[in-house]
Structures are given as structure tokens and as C-alpha cells.
Length: 208
Image (cartoon, rainbow, N blue to C red; front, side):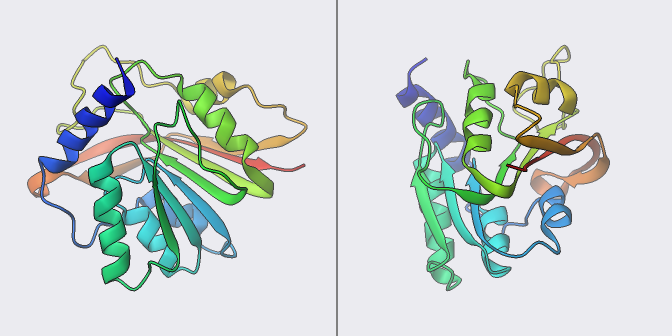
């Protein structure tokens, strides 16, 4: 499927729901970043923008990217209305074709899933190489299927953090795995629905 078709799909996903006015950050982000000194952050697949806005409020300079023009434009508007447009830059990227320029202290990839055939391991490997020494790559994947997920395939395989790390194939002399686990949480979906879900969390630090 072409990049245009992928963009159209994700534009439709975001356009089909009301624009978030105060999107919440992901729990795994806030627990990981708490206590870290602010620097340059890259949010891959920014979606509604909760992570980017929260990071900017903590003093981070954020580059937020998504394949969806609808998502990127909505976040840019939220950044302006929140007085954070000096800390948030939005860019539209199909990450399997183009990647933001620069080096970063934190790169977040929350639920970077797609129904399309995309080489995600290469995207994440590129992200790891975009870290400054001491920087961290936080990858949070679905470890279970939410009742409101677009993918309701009962046979879907949720790769473990260890499988994701093996797929990226980073040199342990340069990158260190700081966390690889499967915590559970109560998630809130559309219309206030709640469900207990599993996250697959992988935190990689560039040490050299």
C-alpha cells in the first residue's frame, strides 16, 4: 500500500473523532521521564499530542511527528493555544521513508502500531542512532488487545520487549537495555470505557 493510502487511513482515524482539547500523556512516559533533566525530545507517532504537550510543560524541547496531517495540525493548534509553540515543533513523516533530523536526549515511540506492512524495526533502529550519548529510547507497545482497538484479531501476536530488542539488533557495547517488562494498568477508552491492559515496555539507553 502506498504512503498516500496510509496517510489517508490515519487521517480518517483522527478525523472520525473529536479533536482532543486536553490530551493526557501516557503513563509509561510520565513514570520514565520524571526526574530526568529536560533536553531535546522526539515523539514518534504523536497522535493527539498528550505526550508532546506534557513534555513541553516539563521544559523539554519537542519535535512531534505523525503520518497524519490531521493529527499534526491539531497538535500544532493545541501548542499555540497553550503557549507552547516555542517548545513544540510538529512535522509530518512517514517514518519508513523519512526521519526527523537532529540528535535527541529522549525518543518516545508509544503504540507505534499500524495495519500496514512497515519495517518497524528499521524505524526504531534509526531512532536509536538518533540518540545522543546518555539519551533514552522509550518503546511502549500493546501487550494485549483493548476492547476499542482497531485490531481485534484474536490471533494477533504482541511481540515481547525482548523480541522487539532482538529485532532492532543494537550493539550492547553502545546501547544498554534499562527496562524490559510487561506492566498492567487500567486504560480508559472512547466514551469512558475502561479495561485492564498489558503494556510491553522497552527502555534503551545510549551509553557511547
